Image (cartoon, rainbow, N blue to C red):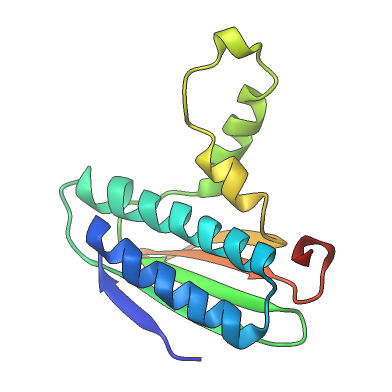
Length: 144
């Protein structure tokens, strides 16, 4: 499948969203899993751009690629921003959901909600490269 490389700026989120929509359509995903995948990729991309580049005073790109196989549709985001493993943040957000509502800060559950909608998520740090791998199974229970 065709790859996408965009500048690490918030204006690139629209192009990323369109790219994921095209991938989901080509893979034959139903509306719900296609939406969940787009939400997850958008949340990861937003974090990459905001925290990995803008807040760190850095510039660079976000590269996306995809593959479709018998397992499902996999989307891979790569960047050279500061290291950030979303799965660590997701665990923090899960712990926060066990706190009483009045004790919780507003917001901060985006990764938890987004990554809950995909069938598989993995983060890798390879040299100076961050790699976020998201997979949605075609025809899985998440599909409906």
